Image 1 (tube, rainbow, N blue to C red):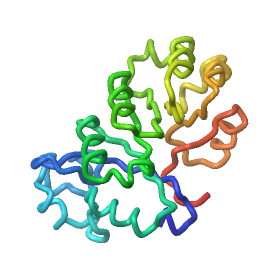
Image 2: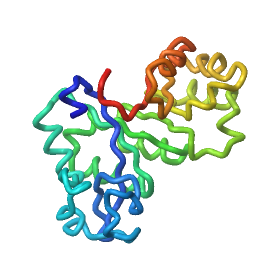
Image 3: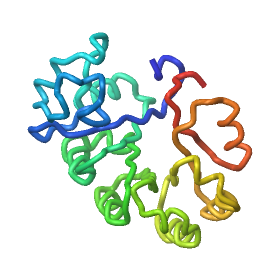
Image 4: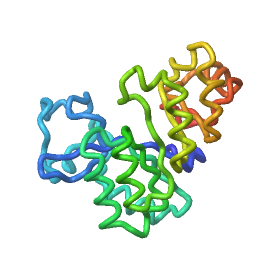
Length: 204
């Protein structure tokens, strides 16, 4: 649906099944998978369950197949745990698609690993950093100057802090915020200098 509406950069949540296979799900308490009662299923068990009884469950392999059928599609990854393991799987099993996976990292360690795995586009998502680091724009600007980043992304509420966006613009890279669905609110952030917005809406 997002692709058909013209979107070519789509963020997907990934998590691991009990047999350590990456699949598309935010967490195992998600209402769409209430039958699992918070327990991780195997990949086969996951694949046999539909989402809300309407949509097919997606594994990483399903996403890869769709990407190969749609060569202008880029996937932004949001991996809740075992992110380094996930990046290793992409690098090892799907090296031809590595340039079309835009990986989000959540720490300096994960950034270093992504660079070693030769991912070209790396988004540093700040929400897992402690609040002190999220507010420390001097540190974040310095990090961006010394490391190759595709973008920073952070919670939109940080934009309400005095001079936060103004200071972050000194990074010289795109700034993204999440998650904003209201169009008027989105425009407010664009007017501040934000480059991109994570949204649940598939329309532009």
